[in-house]
Length: 342
Image 1 (tube, rainbow, N blue to C red):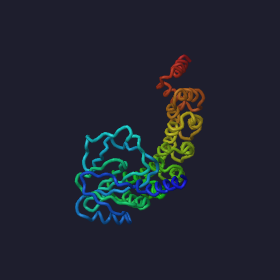
Image 2 (image 1 turned 180 degrees about the vertical axis):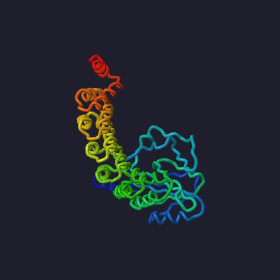
Image 3 (image 1 turned 90 degrees about the vertical axis):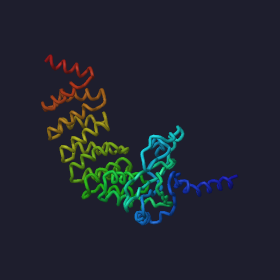
Image 4 (image 1 turned 60 degrees about the horizontal axis):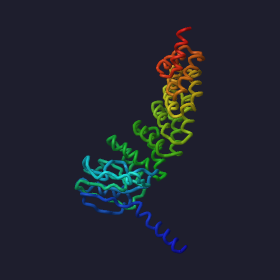
C-alpha cells in the first residue's frame, strides 16, 4: 500500500507542471503551439510575421486569485461582448496560482496586453493565436520591463507594470525597484511604487521605505504616503508616522498625516495630537487637526475637544472648533454650546 501511495504521489508531481501551464481553450482562431524558447527572441520573430495575431503564455503569480476577473466564461479578445455563458458559483470560487498573459501583435509591435484566468475560454475573433509553452518567468519579467520602459501608450505601459508585479519570480521585485528609481519618468515611478507596495510584500515595503527616506522629489514622496496604505505589512504604518513627523517637506507631512489617520485610526491619535501641537509649520499643524477629524467615532470628537481646549496655537484651536462643528456627535454640539455660553 505504501509503495502504491508513493507511486501515486510521484505521478501527481510529474503531471503538476503540465497542469500548471495548461493551454487555454481558444475559440474562433487559427491556433498553433510552440516552445517559448528565449521569450524575447520568440516574440520578436512573431512580431515580424504578417497580419495581427495573439500570443499567450502562463506564469506563476504572487497570490491566488479568483476566476471571476470577468462576468463571462468567454473572454473576447477582439471585441466587447455583453453575452456569454455566465460563470457558475463553483467557477467563481476557483482560484489559481498562475495567470495567462496575452499580447496582441500588429504591424511589428505589441499593441495590447491582457491577463486572463486559466479556466476562461478565449475568443480570438478569427485571428491567429500562438500559445507558448515553458515560458521562463524571469524572461517574461524582462520582456514586460522593456515594454514598460518604452515610449509607448500609457495604458500599455501601466498594464506591463501590473503584469510584472503579479509574477511570483523574485526578479519582479528588483525590476519594479529599478522602474521606481530616480531618473525615470514620474508616472512610471509612481505606478511602479504603487505595485511594489500592493503586490510585493515585505521586500516591496522595504523598497518603499528606502524611497520615502532618500528620494529628493517631494511630489513623489507624497505619492509614497498613499502607497504605504496599500501594504499589508505592519511596518507600513510605522513608516507613515515617521514621514508625518520627519519629512522635510510640509506637503509630504500633511499627506502622511491624512493617510496614517485612515490606516491607523486610534493607534495614531497621540502622533496627530503631537503634530497639531509641535510641528513647526502652521499648515501642517492645521492639517493634523483635519486628520484627527477623520478618525473613527468617537475618537475624532474626543481628540478635537482636547485640541480645542489645550493647544497653545489659537489658529489650531479654531480649526478644531471648526471640525467639531461638522460633526454629528452630540458631544460636539454640547461642547460648542458650552463655548457660546462663555
